[in-house]
Length: 189
Image (cartoon, rainbow, N blue to C red; front, side, top):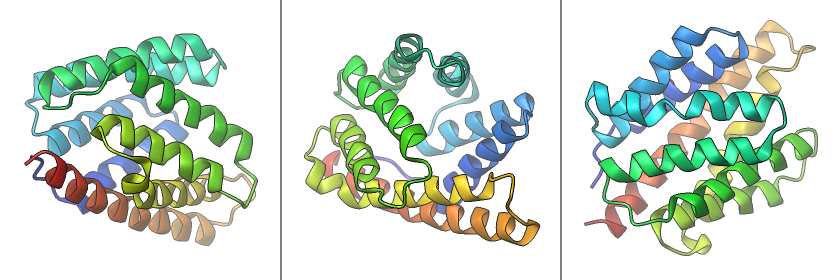
């Protein structure tokens, strides 16, 4: 069972999103480590091992190298599985994870987020070994968060819009992490 503060985990994710946007690698690593440690009750060494593949995966994504991104995300899910009670197949979750990354890029300016919601729901369904119907709400919250994240990072956004969008992204992530925690703890009593 997980036992984390959803608001705190959401704030760490926002922290690394912002650090990534501003090219602040040390801050990015700091927030990723904090997020993994808090969310999965990992010690510092374990959290570092979990996040190691995320940085080259993000770089592969930035350079549009999908197979390389999948390889590193499979490593991430392999290490995470080692420290948790999840039963998923790492390559299967990685396939779904990377698929939403590319879908998000393709649909960033599209107001209809249904495909993205479904893609997120599939990631968490595979990760939690359940149906996408049970993870749909998580998909909705995660899609909202990424939408607000995109708005916050628009070059044309005013300072007021940036602040508002980050606040909305944080609220959506908080709801996502509440739902993730609730469903995780029902499924893994």
